[in-house]
Length: 521
Image (cartoon, rainbow, N blue to C red; front, side, top):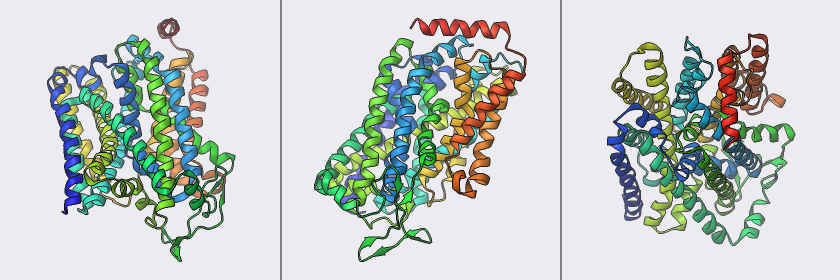
């Protein structure tokens, strides 16, 4: 390892040490009860909730996946995705946050999303809880794998050390501090990591614009690529076996591809995913006072707009500065790393690139913790062993953490995984499985238990059906699977609810009570 790499490593080791210190600080409180370990005892403040929700949501794809998408195909896909996410963030905080915080407390003081759904419908046989927990475990394992891929790519690119070793080392680090510190450590570190991420993105963006000679120079350089800066067209790299071709030192692009209204709606539909994201919804449930969610919303929306704008712009600036550096979609996801190394002195580059580590850690710890809670709290204590002690639930949570992390590491062994695509699939899974049901549970008194079950199964199944069977047909079917799956779930919820017996008076009275309490806040 040369001196430059050693300086970068020292900066990142310093960052890792701080994260571990946070985990150790909260270790005692996390071990006091499963409530503390899984939701922090509903004690978080507005800044921690806001920054934690967004940092855990965005993951490594914000600094690698999204800039890589913009670098490879231009503005359209990345830009419309970012717009959809910004709108979805605002609507989720505006519509869902307060009512879910209130409803989850009223409905049996639920501390997980499966808990909330099960309590909301007063079910004796925990079918909703079981389905929700299983979907969470499946999709969060995939999500965690995408984070481990990001860690492996980061350290492999920086230090030229075998990808597999680096991926496993990063995964073990995340597992260690989540294991000891639980939700409190995860939330506190997410706050710090949210700050690191937005600062890293902003600094690289500003220096990138300056290095490229200003915004006008960036535009002049990339407009030679057909469709690269269009919102209603898309750049189409000329590929041979997945590798973009180069001629006379310039990357080859074909004619700009069409980008019609259906594709725009498809990419905007990323915003629908927010209504079903357990890692975000859980942060709503964990705040200490409901009225503090207004401040959290403002913080979160500002953070998201700045971060998404910077991430897309970095990809475009990167193509202007290094047009032939990355010739595959997978390798393009390292553009942020390259720019950081070239722009800054090694130690400061390490601090900036800690933003990628921050993004990855802040997401993977949330995914592992929520997946573990789905098993320990909902399946183990909720169904398998109802008389399990709180200590037994705590132990089950930690054992499950280890198992899920191992499975995610196995999935992440494929170093050629495109982070954006892996995240897109898991995002669609959560958005379609839980998003419609969350909205109907909070805002429609007539939704029934049967409708809830049908909606979850239909939405989750359609993600797989559309992605694997329908989307490959191309044409109008080649849209993001979240949109058709979300609509399918909504239809099943409405139709099955109207065909089944209306909810009990107890459920309807509880709904009206929550509605009235939320309106007063």
